Image 1 (tube, rainbow, N blue to C red):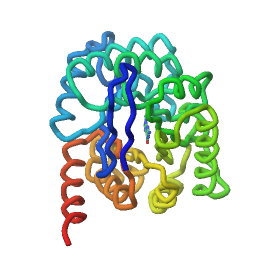
Image 2: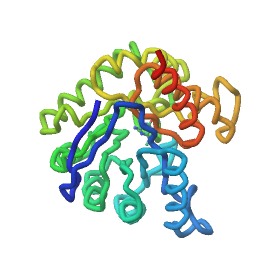
Image 3: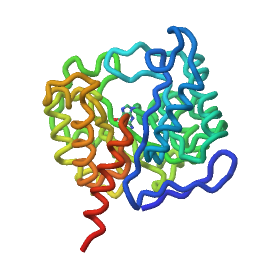
Length: 281
Ligand code: 9MG
């Protein structure tokens, strides 16, 4: 499975999904990359990008809006200020694939002009103009499921049947994307672990991830350090590396093609072991 596309500069790009890809997370938000709580440090962020690439990341996912439960919203101006210069700086220094984690049409547009390759949207292109801009940019898009929004999503998530409800939503978004002119071959699906789901909902989705893989679309899984792992291990976020790697392995084993992670080195080791098993007789 491969996604061929042209970036904004009309350069040929390839998202090669013949083996699972590691997407390294770079949240460029005040809690992660500020100097004395006020200024963002581009140098620190670039150092982190270089480290993730050396450790085995294939894609760097750059976001300027915290999507944690109850996170404050950011304005368009704040998000543009955070994301676009960083995309530009990463593009100037590294030949990796860059995804931009946003929901805003203007952030997608300016990030693509700065060199981003993939649009990663936790709101599945439901914000104003996002669908049309994504279609114009003709980049691969990741459509994620979320019930509610980051401010209220964990209050009391309810589903008739979590697998069916998530699949119905994603099918509807696929339909809308294709109607807007986004080619089927550019669509990536994501059930959205932790986004408006109870611990039980998340584990049902993980156990049955193959149902999404069987749709034929590449599947992205983001479990890294999430509270579903804290719920079963009893560990705080900074001690969830092993649980995150275990979750990523289960996702890959079920056919996920992109794994979104904080802990790149540990995930890369896991993938090497997984690949060795795939490649032997
Ligand atoms: C931005 N972001 C945070 N968690 C995520 C997840 O699970 N999937 C995707 N696609 N993006 C995410």
